[in-house]
Structure formats: structure tokens, C-alpha cells
Image: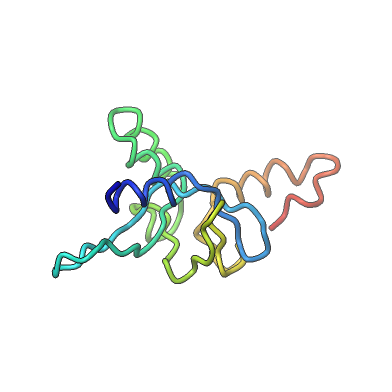
Length: 131
């Protein structure tokens, strides 16, 4: 098994949880740095969200998913998938544990936050929907 296969099994599609054990999403892709000296790849960031997943899938369906996700995001970085820096990754045995709370990552889980605020909070018994 090479480094890329090992990485695929270790990180891709793993559940992301923040420092307070709240679900953040899944690892939809990984940003790597390939050292010039031929050393092993280094994880720079994990990418999460429909835009990252769509780009990873490729093809017409993936391109459409990525384009829609990008259009729904706001801010100056909406053309790029949501990246969580490697420095924010703690343990990653059964799931990827972040070292920071979700509140410190305002660009992550945008659609989920929007849905929680605009749809779920209005439902009876949804008092825990806020982040």
C-alpha cells in the first residue's frame, strides 16, 4: 500500500468533529504538499463540503455540485473549497477530531448553519439547533 492509498483510507470520508465533539462534516478531499526532495506527501489541509466533494467526484454531476455549492457560499473565498488547516487537526483514528470548536471556523458548514438558522430553529423542540 502506498502513501496515497493509506491517506485515502485514513482521512477521506471520515467524520469531522470539533473540539467540543460537535459534528462538522466529512473529509471530502485532502490538500497535499509534495516536497521537491521526493519525500512523502504532507497534509496541508482537509477540504469539506459539497464543493470539495463535487471537485473530487468530477464529471458533469461533480462539476454541477461544486458550482452550486460555490454559488451558495458567500465571501471572498467562495471559489475555493472550504479548507481546514492541518494545524487544526488533532486525533484521526476513528474520526477526525479537530482541536478547535466549530465557532472558530466560520467558513465551515455554511449550508448546515444556514439551514439550522432559517429552517430548523423554527421547529418545535429545536432549541439545540444553534451553534
